[in-house]
Every structure is written in structure tokens, then in C-alpha cells.
Image 1 (tube, rainbow, N blue to C red):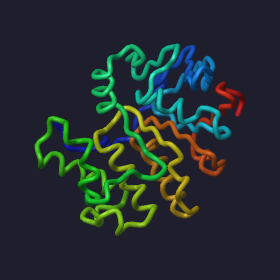
Image 2: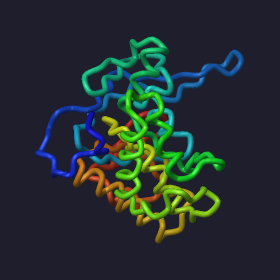
Image 3: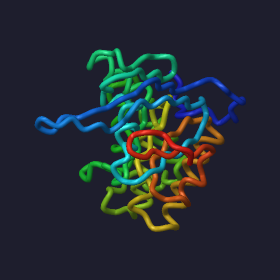
Length: 239
């Protein structure tokens, strides 16, 4: 098995659909009240795209991300990602699918403080059929891509916020996922660190062909995306 994280060759232009949503609805119950969060979303995201999703708080952005990532289930409609209808999978099938196909980048990094940067990045590989040396090679490559191969043995408390987020990004793509999901990846960073993270995401998209869906409140961050979409009250509206 190859130990490289992602191919360094520039991807060929691709127009295939990576994510296809049809009639997507999500409702929750609060006592006797039914709360509608997403109201019939139809959306296609091309393979190799970098898309930003904007909208006010409570508009359903994170819910939509979690549905695409297979973390949550729709109340109605279908979700196809890379040709798989994940809305019909069992919990076990969905867990296996997520491990193979989704890298998730959180606003607050979600690094384990008792593990080094390298150990945090290695976590997604622990269930893969890789030898220890293969895992270590992938971890080194991922940390090199994010510019932190000299911080492999540092703990999160020894890193800046921007460095922690770059470790989190390395963790998200170390297993070479089909899709990178980023929920407010610069929301907890200053402008300089945020710009570094955005440039890293743009590099993963441009040079490595990664499909990225990013939620952000920041128009400056959204400018890095090739497509900007807007959600309001659970429906897509012109950006």
C-alpha cells in the first residue's frame, strides 16, 4: 500500500459530481413541536470543487455539513457522495464509510492534549490495515504538507492556535479522504493565522485535487472558495 498522503501531481480537470443532494430535509422534535432545519435542499457539488457555505446563525449550515459527512441522517431526501447513497446505509456501514471518505476540520481543533502532534494526526490511521512504519510515513508526509514536520513531537499546549489547526487539517487528510469538511476553520484564529489556514486549504484543493466544503461566517474566508452558496432559514438562496 502506498504511504503517500495525496498525489503531488496536479489533478486533471474534473466535472464529475462528488456530492448530490435531492429533496433533503431535516427536522427535530422539541416536545410536541416539530422544528424544520433544512427544507428540501437540492445541490450538486463537483469533484475537485472548493465551496463555501454562508448564512446567518441557525440557517442550517452545520446541519447540512453533518448530513454530507454522514454524521447525521436526513428526515427525507437522498445524499449521494462519490456515487454512494449514504442516506440508506446502516450505522456500521456509515461509520466505515466516514473513516474512508471524510476528513472533518473543526473550529476548535479537537486535538487530544495528552498526544503529540504526530500522535493526533495518526488517529485516523489506527483502524487502517497499515503497518506502523506505513502509518508513520503518512503522518510525516501530512505534517510536512502543513509545514509542521519540525513540530511532530510537540503537544497541543506547545503550539499556537494556527499551528493546532494545521495539525487538525493534517489529521483530516492523512488518510487521503474523498471529501474534506470544514466547519468555521478560521473562526477561532486571528487574521494572519486564518489566512495561513485558508491558503493551506486552497493548496489542498488546487494542487492535490481535494473536494472541500467549508462553512464560514467570514466573507474574507469565503473569497478563497471557487463557489459561494448561502443558506437562509433552511433553503439555498442566491449568494
